[in-house]
Structures are given as C-alpha cells and as structure tokens.
Image (cartoon, rainbow, N blue to C red; front, side, top):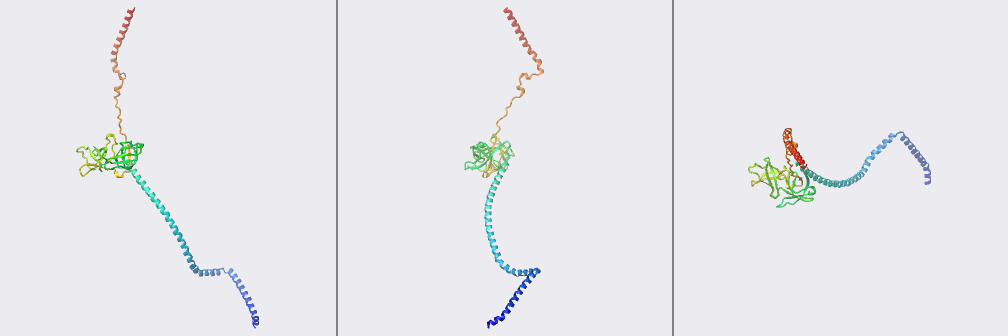
Length: 328
C-alpha cells in the first residue's frame, strides 16, 4: 500500500520541483533585469533598510564610543600630569630668574644712584662694596673690598649715593678700613650753607655728629646744608654731608644723608690736594743784562766815559817810549 501511494505522488512531486526551479530561475532573472533597469528602486530599498538599521547601529555603537572616550580621557589625564610636572619645573626656574633679576635690578639702582653724586671731573675714584662692619660701642668703621692694589690710600674720602660717609684710615692690599663720620676720632672741616660759616664736624659715636667751632652769632639754623670745605687738603670741597638739626639739649648736630644701615656700594675718591705753588720769578726788565738796556738817549753819556780810556792809552805809550830811551 505504501508503495502504491508513493508511486501516485511521485509525478506530482517531480512536477512541483520543476515548477519551483523554473519559478526561482525566472524570478532571479526578473530581479536581475529589474536591478539593471530600475536602480532607483533598489537604492530606495537600500535606504529603507539603512534607516531601519540605524537605530540599532546607534545603540550598538554607544558602548564603543563610551569606551573610546574613556581611553581618550585617560590619555588626557596622563598628558595633564606630564604637563603639570613640566610647568612646575618651569615655574621653579622662572622664580630663580625672577630672584636674580630683582638682585640685578637693585644693584643697578644702587649703581645709578651712586653715579648721580656730582663730583669734580678731575677726581678719579675706585668703586667697592662694603664687606664687613667692624663697628662696636667705641668704634664706627666699615671694611671695603678695595685696597692698595686699586690705588686706595689712607686719608682718601669715601662717598655713597647720598654723600660723604667717612675716610680711609687703613689701606691693605685688597681691602681697606673706613672711618665713619660718626666715629669719635672723626674730624672733618665743613661749610654750613647758605651762611658759608666754617666749622668742624666731630663724631662722638652717637647717631648724629656735632658741629664744633661755630662762631657766635653765625645764624646757623636747622635745615641748613653741610658740605666739606676742603681745608687742610684731606678731601675735596663741596661733598654733601647732611642737614643741620637741633637736639633736645639745644646743640646743633648734623643728620647725615647716608644711612649706615644701607651702605653697600661706595666710591673711594682719589683726590690729590694741589701742593705745588708756581714759582714767582722777577720781571724780565730786572733780569736783562746792562748792554741790552742801552737806549739812544744814553749814547752821548758814553762819549765822556771813553775819554779816560784814551788818556790811559796815551800814558802807556809815553811810558813805553821813555823806557826804550833809557835802555839805549
């Protein structure tokens, strides 16, 4: 029985397979021809499929984008760390340069202030730095790094950017000692302007040196300026020292322009007092020989003076003739 039914259905199965094959081949050929002839239809269909797949692709791409952003942020954090370290080192170097620039700026300001002190162009000087303060309760001295090798000698005046601060009392080969105006042993001849009265600026180890030997009724008032007078040849005249003040005890003292607490760069003045005085010779009229002083008016007086000479010559001739006769 089964064999009979399979024999009955076999022709129908073969026909259906053939029909299906023919249909599929016909459909493929139709689609191929249609794809070549109607490209727009396929493009539209592809676009529809793309639009339908876009949300799915977007959802699937979000984790990938998040992972990519995480990697980029990690790289950025690493770059920021390296950049921060580089900027920290650069900032430290810039701070060192800033400190050095500030030191150079301060030194330049001191040099400019020192050069603003007006000096006689004929006075040369040596610039040095104060390298030691040997002051104490009974002495007011500084040490400057300029000595005999630089032309510094004992007695030379020392000024800073404000005015006179003292003089050299001991000169070594490479360093010298400065005696300040406030020292007990300091004595400087000065002028008080504008009265032009002479005085002596005497230190007594106090903050302000005193004015001594002022004439009575000099009219010196607080606020007058005190400058060196140059007497004695120790230092040049006109160096600014300070202003006159009156203390509580009624004495006149001088508040110096220079401040010992700010002394750094100083100038040692190489001043030579003019000791040679030109020789005063007598007038030329008194030193000319007598023959150069003859004048035409004196010629007649010369004739009588020639007569005694002629008489003496005649007498000598007569004496010679008498001697010859006696000999004969």
